[in-house]
Image (tube, rainbow, N blue to C red; front, side, top):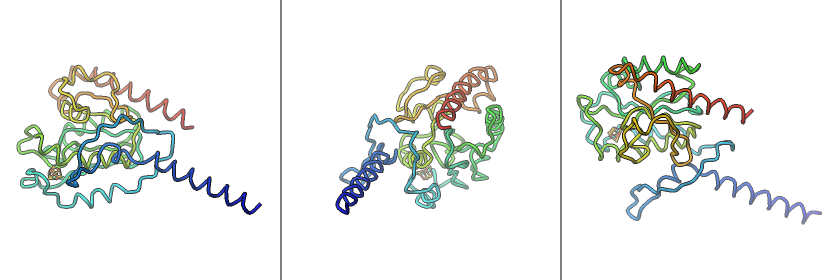
Length: 244
Ligand code: SF4
């Protein structure tokens, strides 16, 4: 009887270890350490199992601490604040933009200017509050005069976004604007061609759509954004029905 119990305990232990390994984070799936110790992209086509409770080994606070007073790229020299991101660390939806603008740089918060107000309205139209989702950018520091992000800046900053996504494990990522969509999907395809359908970001559903700042200049594109948002809402609704 004692032997049987020991055998059972050992089998259970092995099962727990194997489940833990199969749930290992997105970050480890996306990045491997090269011989130099530098993080390099490792494109692994692995589905993330959202039906299993994810227990991240680190927190968003840990990542922010690791980022510290970051000087990993040249953008540090003119920034006022690092804009790390804000919202729910367990949200099913992460909205990713390009980079902080002037208002965000001054306040250290993502999407707080005019485009941010429009994003807040979009989130409300989805029946959510800002605190229910997580909002961040590809870059955490403002490029001078809001110029486009440069490849070396993206390469320096993106690993921290990957870690944030690994902790949050959202069901859906909404990539807002050309840079967010093209950077995450590693493609040069125009946002107008990418939007409107889900793509896979290492197993997480990613919906590209227009950036709120673009909508301020082109209000006619709100219709397409609303179509994209409705597809996201349907996905979130289905996911919540499954998890009930
Ligand atoms: S943009 Fe990112 S990598 Fe560059 S200094 Fe800011 S936090 Fe660091």
